[in-house]
Image 1: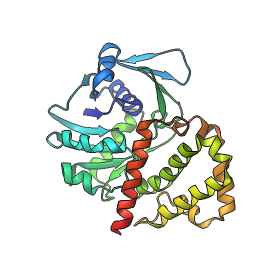
Image 2: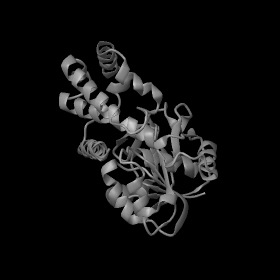
Image 3: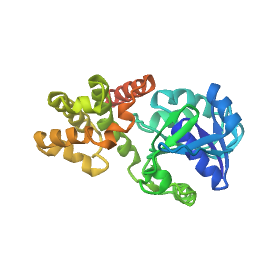
Image 4: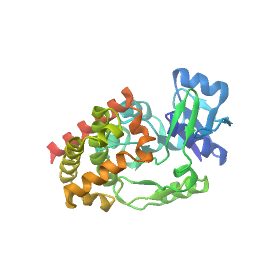
Length: 290
């Protein structure tokens, strides 16, 4: 497969390295200092706090060039507009792997509806200088499945081929027939969570404030009620039906857990703020439209 990975952060670097090692013709798109670092050392990977660094010589490019079998986009939500402009003249199916609550329509309007695939990356990690430090429990180690799907929910030969290709490369992908609803549900939960954590100064600080957790839950319920489809996965419906006291206790426990403390929730950045703001705009726009 001739593959372009658009975005050379943690997720794009992990994805490109794995696909390159599986024997695919992969190019990783990067710019600026990141491009220079990748040209010098390749993708540098290290597991958690390990001192061992593995270098993968993935070819890097500064601009899309030619045609591809698949283009995977792994950027922040607020960066998608610029990506769409550069991909419009480039041939190839495009798999958007990021937070997105606006539906497939604006993506298809820019590059063609027939090119759009939706998904969400389940890998995680951090940048340590030029080194990508990743956690072993993610889609790259086959424990958590990465959902991908057609924008209209069909199970197509194209989707099945992409899933097979990723699995063969050690990326635990799965076909999700309700991918658009999955992304909207995720945003309905993630935006109140991320913004509340930032306001409180971290997940543990938020857990110590029951009133703030209740306010966060109220916003989650409001967002879920405004969805134009049932929530996906269906378990998120529990946020609307279970007693408030039980949910507040459960959310406070999660916020104090190692999962929350060692996640991106505890590492606020201007990019995270910009992404949450853009997702919130998308949620409001869809609620107003419906």
